[in-house]
Amino acid sequence: MVCVREIQGVVLSELFRCLEYFDAVPYLFYSDKSYNEEYHQEIKRVNKSLFEEINSNHIFDFPIHDLVYTNYILRNLCQTLLKDYRVIIAPCGPKPFSLLAMINSLSYEESIEVWRISPGLKIKKVDRKPTGLISVIEVLFEEEPETV
Image (cartoon, rainbow, N blue to C red; front, side, top):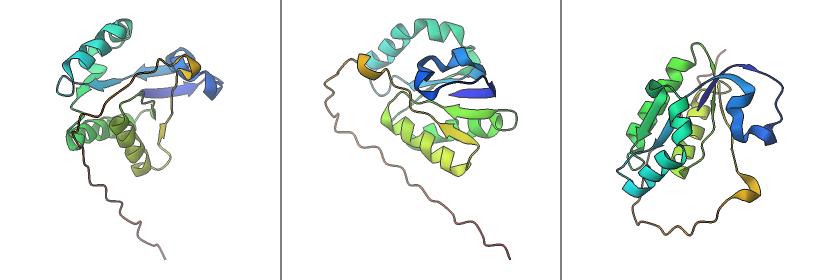
């Protein structure tokens, strides 16, 4: 997640390292140990330099199987940041977090953007097997009252 003050002419396809192009305040969300201890540790190992660069108060681990709580964290952070920043959420996985990012962007109309960041052809294929766990969240969209 990135909070942007100013954009400096960026081509969207070149945004894999989007922090290099923005006057940005980065926030990091990553899956906590409840999903998979090995995956949690791998995230921290592979992204060690990123964890060192970002203010520790801007790093959040979340329980991927508790979408209500994860959405609560994300929504509250967005509400606070929207007072001073343009908010861009760039989810790199897992998919449930990407879903929450898109739901939050819909809630704030054009105030929150969700960008897909991809390593392109360099992506390493991983044969992931389903765990059998199911995550469910109820989403309600209220209609805007008509004005006369």
